[in-house]
Image (tube, rainbow, N blue to C red; front, top):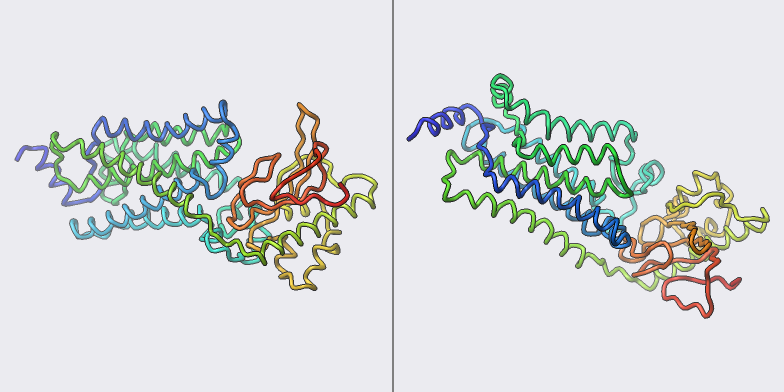
Length: 408
């Protein structure tokens, strides 16, 4: 047995955090995969923005890839916790904390199953969470949330790996049992931090969440290799295979989830209720426009209806036809917070096309699958909507999803 292996055994007897260096090819591949997400999204923005806008929506490939990356990282951390306790007879608190953290991120990504099971979240979240979903991170102050995320990215992914290069701090971190990312992943963590700092395009947050999820997944994967006292050169290719394997597993699981996750909650009763509620919403805004002699909207937007009502002080709508549907059985919470029959928010879109001069106002629901399928100008998939105003409406107008009021 050579001196290096004896030294590793001595270190491992004291701590589970002694790090074996990732294979060069494996670490390059891990960084490449993280950067590939950024490069691919940048290419889409410049060449196929419609596809980019589609894949970054809720319950699409980007969000589910993020969710699965964090869940796999959580599972890996649990394995590290069990293996470390057994091997070193020492409570692996950091692995336990890391597994809980990654699992909480996973649950936040899927809104704690709200869109999966279609339950109505507590009123506190309907009122204080601008997404009207059961997620804690969206009710936290924006500045505090952004600072916290930056601290996690920069502190855990960049500063700690650098501190591990100094003997004194390395001994302390090893003694404390901290699971530190290998310094080979610093480029990826720093890229996530930098992109989050400059926020170059819409939905940047969705992109960096996936990149960060991959960083945590690769961190756990490489750290699990530390339980090996020695990795023979002939077996180093297993590191590369494992890096590619977990990445493909995450993408494969997310693609499968998106494909099968169509909910099939296409109840005729709920669809009829949705049409009726949208017609009531249209009448409320039409009546208000008649009272004012103009449109009640002053700016272009694309928000949840509840957000539009609150931002513009449209309290008059609570005395309108939509609110009166409670007398016909509409749930009071759904009426107060403008929630559709599938317990998702109603949306309002006011769009202007500078090239054609077209203006369009549409109220719509995500429909049975509880996710947006549409673009700014056409309702697609199973989304259901009603036109409030559209200067580009052409006759004859045929649409499976949109309701055209008789006034047209």
